[in-house]
Image 1 (cartoon, one colour):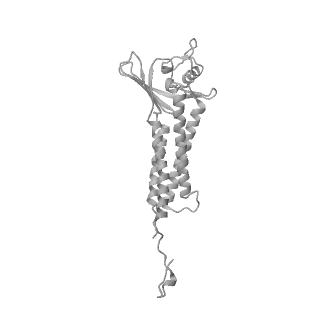
Image 2 (spheres, rainbow, N blue to C red; image 1 turned 180 degrees about the vertical axis):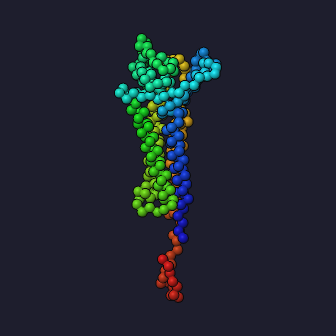
Image 3 (cartoon, rainbow, N blue to C red; image 1 turned 90 degrees about the vertical axis):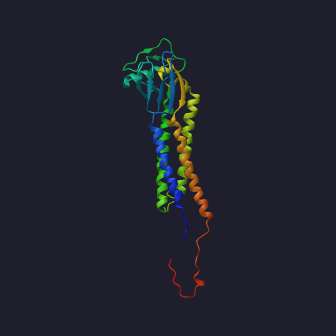
Length: 268
């Protein structure tokens, strides 16, 4: 009987499922950016963390500390995004517009925004809306392709598709593309983080106004994408190793009818 080595394909399926879960967590979690926030009046450092949609700002000026929800707020008509702790949409929008113009909004995490236009900031502490949209779009593409790779893996582990696009060649190339998209996302965000000034102002009023000194870093949400990329790269290796082993295995024995003249019945 021919050896199929379907265990390698099932292993690729499990790895694909893990990759999907990691991408979902990276997309939905709130730790792409993390930072301490130091101020002279504090007994302990405050903390900032936010993801692609929300986050949290814990201020330790008082005892007990106060926690405020952070919202990633984008203004499409001027093409910018920033992070705000204001409690309603209008106040957040006014704060982001002020930051985009280089003005100084009040830092209080309340329901209103007042703007000081007397001493403009040297650099608007905002995030490019085009960059933000591209990042989320690529993450969604990566997620959809990873789901496709998982589906193709379990299909090939249980059946033998006749169409190449649904067979192992399709599964192989889907995993390659998922890996490349994941690497592109990581490079894109990493380069933007290093070159745009985001790590200096964090797109937050409290940091941009100098009320706190940041200790910025990239959080676990970002680094999970490395593991997701390793999972899909592992799938490529599993499929290729399986193909190599199948080529190395000796062919199944064949029976030659002409060598049997004793009336033996052969079933095909």
